[in-house]
Structure formats: C-alpha cells, structure tokens
Length: 349
Ligand code: NAD
Ligand code: TYD
Image (cartoon, rainbow, N blue to C red):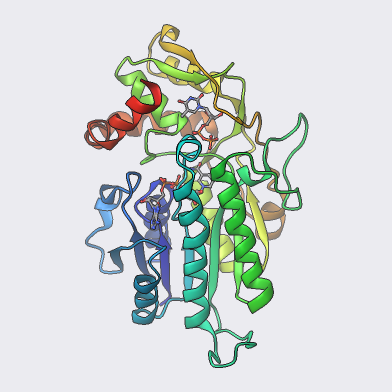
C-alpha cells in the first residue's frame, strides 16, 4: 500500500489524475489537497468522494503549518504537485498570486517532503532518504517559450518563459531541481503540452469555446487565431505521470506532448461544426500581450525510455470531450452562473 499526496486535486488535471490512479492502483491511499480557489471544484471528484482510499483536505500549499501537519500525520510515499494558478490571462492581470502559489507553495511542499523523508534529519548534510519516495513536479511546455518554425522543445531546450504564469512555473522547476542537487531529494519533473478533456474550467480555450457555442455566445479568438498549440488528452497525460512516478529516473525531466499541433482558429471551427453552429459566432478580439505563437513538444524521451504513447486521437478525443460537456450541463451551469461569469465579464466585457 502506497500513500500518494496529490495537490490541486480538485482542478482539471488533478481530479482526472486522482480518478485515474484510484482505478489503476486500487490499493493506494490518495490524500487530495486543494485550496479550492475559483478553479478548484470538489464536484469534479463527486464520483469517488466515498472511496475509503481517498481523503480530502482543504489546504493552501503556501500554508507551511498545515502542509507539515499533513506530512506528519500520513506516511506519504509520493507527492504529485498539480496545485497552481494555471491561467495565462489571469497571470497578466494579477501576477502576484502566481509567484506565491507556484514558486513559494512548491518550496513549502519540497521542504515538508525533505523533512519527513530524510533518514537523518539532525544532519544538515544528510542526502539519504526513505526508500521508494518521490516528489513529482507538474510543469508545462510553456516554460520553453514560443517555438520557432520547425523547432520542437526537448528537455534540453533553454527556458524562455513569456508570461508571469510560465515564468512562475519555470521558477518552480528550478527550485525543485535545486532541492534535488543540493539536498539529494528524489525529484522528477514533467512538462506537458496543452491538455483537453472533461472537467476543464471554462476559461481555457476548448471548454470556453464549447460552452459559448452551446449558448450561442460570441467565440473570442485572440489576434489572428493562427497561434499553434500541441493538444494532449488529459488521460494520456495522467498515464504518463503514473509511469514517471513509478519508472522515471530520479532527477530527470520528461516532456509529454500531444504530437498534435493545431491553430486555434481550426479548433474553434471544428467545435462549431461538431455542434452544428455558425462561424458567425467567431469574434476576433485584441491579442494577448506577449502571446506565444507556437508550442511544439518532442516526447521522444518518455516514449523511448518509459514506453509511453498516446491512446487518444485528437479527432475522437475532441468529439468525446464535446459530448462530455453536453452530457454534464448541470456542472457547466453551476460554473457559468458563479465566479466564472464575473471573470468572463471583466475579461471580455
Ligand atoms: P486548474 O487551474 O484547473 O487546477 C489548479 C488547482 O490548484 C485548482 O483546484 C486550485 O484550487 C488549486 N490551487 C490553486 N492554488 C492553490 C494553492 N495555493 N494551494 C492549494 N491548491 C491550489 O489547473 P490544471 O489545468 O488542472 O493544471 C494543473 C497543473 O498542470 C498546473 O500545475 C499547471 O501548471 C499544469 N499544466 C496544465 C496544463 C493544461 O493544459 N491545463 C498543461 C501543462 C501543465
Ligand atoms: P489557453 O487555453 O488559455 O492556454 P495557453 O495560453 O496556456 O496555451 O489558450 C490556448 C490558446 O487559445 C492560446 O493561444 C490563447 C488562445 N485563446 C483564444 O484565442 N481565445 C480565448 O478566449 C482563450 C481563453 C484562449
């Protein structure tokens, strides 16, 4: 029986990951923690809330006291840190919380893991840890910045983050690697491309467009709409993180890409056509400042070293995703009527 601490477990990827792990490793104990910011929705985990192998704590990863109490109470083997402020547009408006949560919150977790896992905590130079423990930091391909034509990011590509969000994620990666190098803490990092799938908060492109389309609302497309993202199904991401957790090499970084580059406008049109709506809903709006033109991720390392591959084609994955939102309009309505609507109004008027 292993105990896994998942932070940000009520968000989009974290909630999909917890469901995936309980299904794949039914003997694992999962401790989910989440501050329940606007993006954290306990309803995302309703289907497993009575599972005896799942416990939830409302906790902010910046709250050192609380995080240390959780580490002291449970014998944690693995940490997977999803908790983050995750939306680029919000980071442009309010960068402060991105730096405190994404960098300082990660440091609080690294400190707590180091303290609990160290075999000789009294010796400050001790680099030996309990067997089988690992801290996995969830990063993003956005730390590499905008890709030039023909370029694909490898794990060795330089970090050139453009937004306060991606800069804060790059900062967290650096801190995690510094804990590995200085204190010997067993750390791995993964950098995935843009995810899509069920339970994604509708501030991100795909759920925003699906939901606006359903309600016949304008579909905001930034600039010329020709920016490229590399889309990955959230379940393929979850499977990759599971593989890294169990078979990844200590101290290594793994890119996880969708091998599926699409221009934003093509995605918007695909959703419009699937839902049988009109392209007249498309509304070109002012571009995002510092907008990265293209992301392209090379996943050769995780494919060749860990045997990971994608199970979902984008065409089928997007259709299933659209069906999920249509089948879960209660979930959608509760979000659209709340905080999200106020945010939508300040962002888009
Ligand atoms: P999300 O915004 O849906 O979820 C983030 C979760 O973290 C929310 O539940 C929120 O309540 C929680 N959280 C925020 N601040 C917290 C704090 N201080 N303490 C505890 N919990 C806090 O984001 P997501 O899309 O699920 O992304 C999860 C992780 O994956 C992030 O680290 C993000 O950088 C990374 N990532 C996301 C994508 C993507 O396409 N969504 C791609 C690559 C990497
Ligand atoms: P987003 O989902 O915010 O992810 P990220 O910026 O982290 O890649 O945006 C994906 C792309 O879609 C990005 O190029 C910005 C663009 N976009 C729009 O054109 N309109 C929108 O309303 C949103 C939210 C994003």
